[in-house]
Length: 196
Length: 280
Image (cartoon, rainbow over all chains, first blue to last red):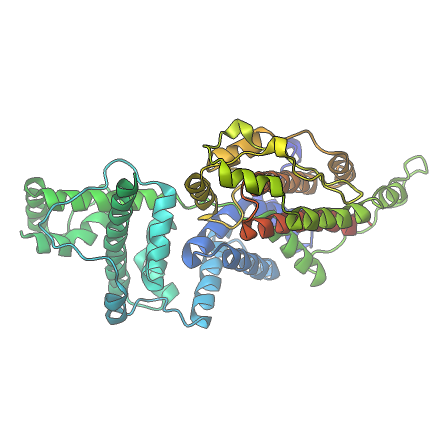
């Protein structure tokens, strides 16, 4: 790959990108592409859409790079911008970024277990593909909060600000999302065990 | 504390920092006592912790296709955000770099067109022998049996698949392999083989074709970071072609896979085209 002697820091790349240097833009893209694309993919569960959203996030960032003053981390700026791009897309498509509980209850296809009764536990580790499939099944609102909190590491106050809900709502949706994921994962394991 | 009370305070327990305690010490003691004595609640706590920690591992797990950067760069160039470097003062006549680069890139145009033609040929061509074999002889696929890459030639002819290269996975195996490769991304991640098929496609990576060598030679004149990007994108798209070709060889009736293969060829042609635009 790149000759280490030629490697420049992110801060230098940002300054060079402000001058329109393509190599600097590419370096910034290479540094952050996985995080940005992964975030988009988790949120929309569609690779083609995720590519478009990642592209849009980078374009918005690069168009505004001249205004970046370095007060916050570049990655923080980019990730917030990516979340905003994705949420804007969800809103445009009429998908709820915050779950509507009454709607969700009827959409829930997985029977809810009563507390206090024991069944199969998710022992060991969780396969990444299985977890991704389970996340894909989450209603969009639950998925948004789960991805932002548990995958991306945003705090509840940041999520509340980004999606426009209360902190309590964010906490509640996160918990419900985890419970649904648990049900989905157990269901998938049971199905897999049945089919051998 | 009852099971439902445990569930109510569970989010607080799960999301606190490791060294934080409950705001209410009584609650914490009751919570811990209950969880120790109730297997169902203990399982619930363990499972939710497991889900959260597994989720954290997904943060950078996906690689976007090379075409994403190609599109971004094209858009930035069109909007004038990427600016061409200011020409340096004339160099001594002994180093006529610019004219040579322009001349050396002339071959890229027909090669890009040929790649598209080759892709169209491969996608539209249905190897009858394979179809028959797949129907009558389903056997478990072995990674070492994967058919080698059909490299496109500048003349636009990709050699058709021959019966000698036929491998026929059991339908359910093929379906499972394909699902695994495509669940997260339409384009399977070329940097992280997710299954034996992908691993095999990487394992049999041939040395660069003549066209790829010329392409690499041309982009070697660019800045190191740009060159590295072109190199990695070429590797990625070649791996994608190999991987998809191997799959199509075994599943010639899979229209999605054939379309995916055509997309991969188009992507490679686009990569050549972008390089040509940049150099000229």
